[in-house]
Length: 310
Image (cartoon, rainbow, N blue to C red; front, side):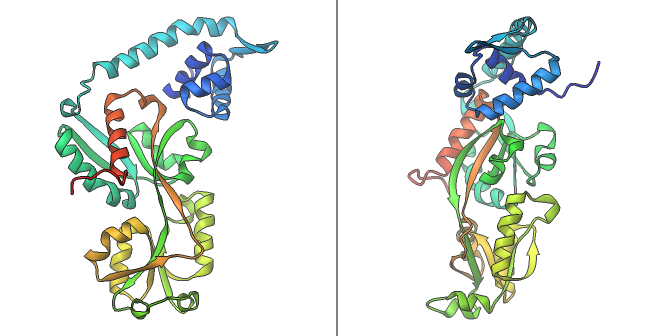
């Protein structure tokens, strides 16, 4: 038997398409884009060596091979759904390790407040944060992740079109310096003032970043005299405190750490580099009750109207 490349997400797409042989309706059911469905169908056709769905007039009809797959696919996903139904759904009865892939920025922003919520509501859930990068080869880690905390550039990458995601908030980059830095004493810092300074910023390394990220980093570097790059966002405030460089930090991280270091936030960088921070997960987890609960927690975590435990 040859090695199959099909995964459970693709089979789920095929199951829905065979029951709803219309890309628009299937797209609504699955919450995926039509190009994603078309790509999945092409892969399934290659895997089964059969067209599966053929156009007859204005409709798509199932081939004999496709009809033979209906019952086996139903059996597969009835069994998968049963797994989640059998799991205790009350948060205080869930016993589960949740693995979250992100950078140190995501861990710093989410870990403490998320843990405090879970300790109060779902003490049986434990957390593991795993460092990931932006390529599918590095971020996927053999499907061990429950969730990813990632910027929108990753969610919109062709490699992750089959994933679902929840926008959490919009972030911007800011300048931060030591309170002893000359810029910290200025009432207004001009672009000319910044051009006289040396900078430190976050940088994964060319081989580990997406084309979009390299473009953004390139724009930032073209406007600043960069003398140091580090692969950890959370080191930047310490570097600002201990050197005379200006560091470029995501605002939420800067606001979280500014009082822990002898630092000052000067304001947003120019040109602006905003991004949306997202919770992302594989479609196969959509009906998992533990995942549904965690998604609701993340919604609360980043809802400014909700008072969270400290």
